[in-house]
Image (tube, rainbow, N blue to C red; front, side, top):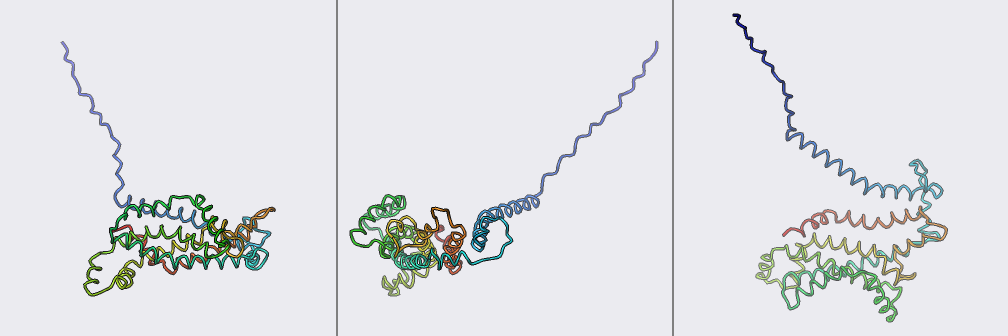
Length: 297
């Protein structure tokens, strides 16, 4: 009888793939920074490239407006045409500046007084009146253009600065009243109580206490008030002919039956931006502070 020798089978070792190491916190942070930078650059490109191309077109000679080349001899031909040629826009520019400045000088103090009243006093109809002011922002301009046209025609105020200023006030004051109310709501009432204990009258309180504290909101209101007035197109189209014509309406003279004067349109577009750029540079510090202050109490 033979004995069978049994030999154990050789052990097989299976090699598992080494697990991939998860990205550490530093890598994730770097990736996040890269994505933020790329997204910021993309947004800046979409915002600034049209302005860049507008400037390039404005300084191109008339015969090279449709060329995509960036190599050209700069020319002021388009600016000369809109400022002294057949399409003189000097008067519309002057009218827009005058109407915008007067609208701002009237609307901001009125809105500040109204915002303070809505913020600090609870009079009968307080909430309903405040909601009515907000509701005016949802009324299409076309719906009230005909009533304004009929009113000013009966008063003999068509093609006057006063008519456009009144219309702009009706559009701007409700908006910046609501805006300034948010700033006044965030001001500590204890400061006002201390000022009253020191003998401040209501006028002195508004001028020496509320106005300095609400300065960031006032600067924001100034920018928005002038911007809304400067860009208004619908009502000047109805109410202005020649004497009170504003710049947005004056730009329509560049649209002719034979085509659009694109070089002159680009030059006028740069001129439209100049006042707002100057205003933004003057109040940029207060504007940035005001845009964040009004939302936090």
